[in-house]
Image 1: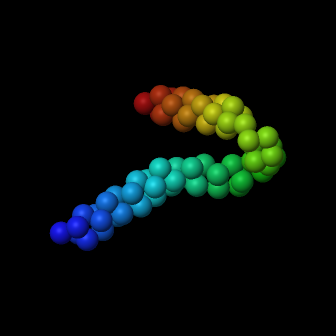
Image 2: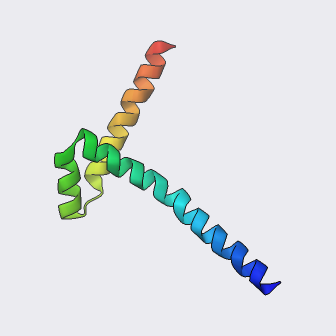
Length: 70
């Protein structure tokens, strides 16, 4: 019974890590493909503000486009 609990706990921890890591990986790839200068600056300075600003700007454009479509 203890082995089953250990396996279940290990699987849950790995799944949680994958769930939290997927958006980070997707955002990193998106920045590398769309704005490599920003990605390099973020990697060098370890600053989150440029990433947040760019994501908020992109979400604003998405919302504006959806509202214009409706």
